[in-house]
Amino acid sequence: MDQRVQDWLRELTSTPTAAGHERRVIAWVERWLAGREGLTRRDDEHGNIEIALDPNLGQDGAGGPAFREGPPVYFTAHMDHPAFVVHRVIGPGTLELAFRGGVMEDYFPDARVVIHTTDGRRLGGAITGRGDLSDPDKSWLCDLDEEDESVTTADFATWDLPEAEIVSEPLPGVGGEPGEIIYTNACDDLAAVVAALAALDRLRELRAAGESVHDSRVLLTRAEEIGFIGAIGASRGGFMPAGSRVIALENSRSFDDSPIGGGPIVRVGDRVSVFAPSLTGAVAKVAERISGGSAHVTASQKLSEGPKWRWQRKLMAGGACEASVYCHFGYEATCVCLPLGNYHNMADLAAVQAGTNTTRPRVGREHVAISDFEGMVELLVGCGRDLPGTGGLGERLAKLWEDRKQVLA
View (cartoon, one colour):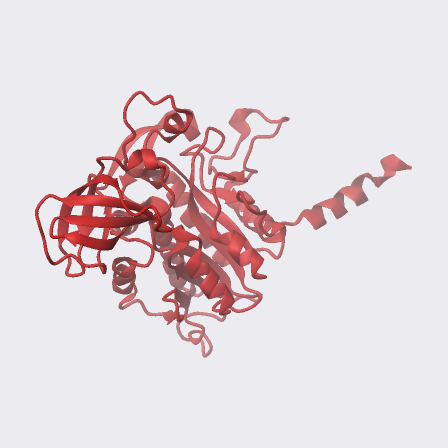
């Protein structure tokens, strides 16, 4: 992986964020955008951010050719992650924290947290019990390691986790072959933010070199973890033009049939809806073009005949994502996701849910395979270069009919 992109991945996934408190991620994006010619920025009234290839470049032959025909292609990702906000300051050493996001209550007792103040300080603390049970968010009491009278309700808190690192270890998706995995605070959805920006940057470079690409844009949303609030606001306000083709990016909990290391996942739906079939098929067609084969080895193939560039096609019904929001508001939308370990920082989650865990539930760093991340970027670049109008099923059916209709005679 390009060292620049690896640095972006480490930095942004280690950046503290929470629903409604995405300012540090936004500041990182602003630094990333500074000095990059050929990109434009647009914000909506809710603080969602669009970064797009500059449509004015290329009209007179300077800066790159005109866009390919067709509607804008969006890569979307959210800038928040499950975390706490300071709900009430009880005293100089005691806070009430409201949790914004989906995490089992088993993980909270005695957990270590870090308070992030508006002036950039980090204060250690520990969860000591439940707070106001009438609060719509899960509310928890927190004792600070040292008294501090400057904490306010403008501050927020995250789990206290080790620094990010990339390690080599066996990958389930490639039969236990060694690979690289990044362990970090918040893959969901900051790894996808990096993937979207890395793909857009590559498309910018390709266009500057003379290649015609789609009108490609990135939409970064807020407050996804409390019910897709930023995406709803962007959709209600028509921030994305009608007719846009929207590829939502996510990090989704990995299961045995959606393993880490198995490649990026073209997600056909989630637990609340099925996404636009035509766009899902089109993205899958790009994946097939890159890999030279389908997501799975067919019954008539040997395992050795499968594609070397790995990708997956799954429902991923363990959660819901912003693609369902965009579909509801009339956009043609689908999703590409990374198979994720320690979903929402819940270590040993399957055992905790089953009640078979032998140790106390503890939070841990989320993790994804570097190869899956690289595959997501490559797939998005492929979509920006040439995203078909459909997945081609109609053409295949027509050819099958013409080639084989005589058997019905």
